[in-house]
Structures are given as structure tokens and as C-alpha cells.
Image 1 (cartoon, rainbow, N blue to C red):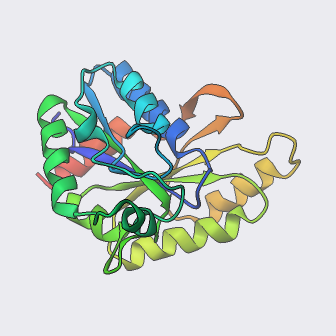
Image 2: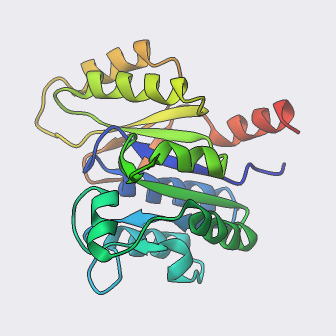
Image 3: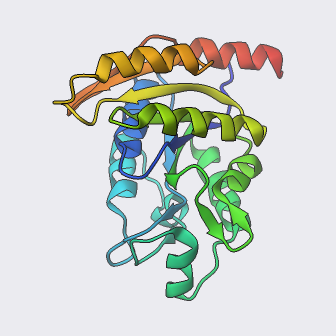
Length: 227
């Protein structure tokens, strides 16, 4: 089986565990015997041109990857990417990101790309993150931080992606509020309303997620549909 070239990891908001979920996916694919590269195209709040999320992803991949390809835009200020880029005196160029992705794709069988912020965050004054996803032609895995308000955020995010014509292969429930008593009830509700499979649940600070749907099966089916 030849896998699709990667997945784009989107979140329903910022700080809902995209990096943890992305690293979990990297470990999952490595356990399946696939060389897995990683990418964090845009990151805000970087120190000395490095981003902690990108470094975690590189460590998870186990590959010697050029940092500039993994994170072509390490932005200094912790704010929306288009504003952070403006402060740093640069413009986020999707073409540069696409070139960096191609470098990584040549080094591995699959690339896990972690997005920035929420789904509809602007990358420049005339482009959104969804424009980049379409350009890379990657299916999305939606990470939902399970907390108060997550149903609204998740359903709006899924509906927006579908309206943009972006392929969603499934979603991950990340239990970021361990003491909240309604976690499972909200996961059950989301499983009813999101018409895509729940790929797995991540317990609070608990290793890797347990798959309920095999991503390898999904990849094989996609290859049959789009040879």
C-alpha cells in the first residue's frame, strides 16, 4: 500500500493539544513501520528562531530533518500569524511552505503537518490556513479539546472545513479538562453529530491515543478511491 502523503492536524482552538495529538500520530505511524516526517509550517511565540512544538515533533519522528523545512516561519510574537509576521517584517508565503513540504515528503512515506491556532486563522491579509491546506492537498484530522463549549467549536469547525471543500478523515478527542465530569457525555454527543469517525481518545497526560478506527484502513480505502 502506498499511503497518501500526509495529514494536516487542525484544532478547534488554540491550546487544545494539537502537538500532543500530532506526536501521538507520529508514534502510531512509526509503529506501523512507516517513516514519518513532521512539519509545523507556522509557529508564533518562538525563541531564538525555534519553536517548542516543532522540536517535540522532530524528536517524535526520529528522523534527521532540517529545522527550516519543519518550521519555515518561526515567528517571535505570540499572536495571530499574520500579525506576528507583520511584526517580524515578513509575509507568510504558501509557496515556501509547499517547497518545504516537498523536501520532507521526499524523506519519508508520510508527513504529519501540525497547523497553527484554530482552523480559520489568517496567515496573511489575503489568505487563511484553509487556503494552505487546500494547496498542500492534505486530508484533515480535527483535534477537539474536550471542555465546556467544545461541541459548538467542533461542529462549527467541521462545518467550515466541509464548506471549504476540505477532506476530513476523522477527529480525535483530547481530554484536556480531567476534572470536568461531562467529558464522556460530550464525546458521545460529538460522535453523534460529527459525521466522521472518532479516530481515538487521548486521556489527560496519558501516552498515545487508542484507535477506534484504523488510519491504515482509511488510507487503503482512499487509495482505492483515488489511485
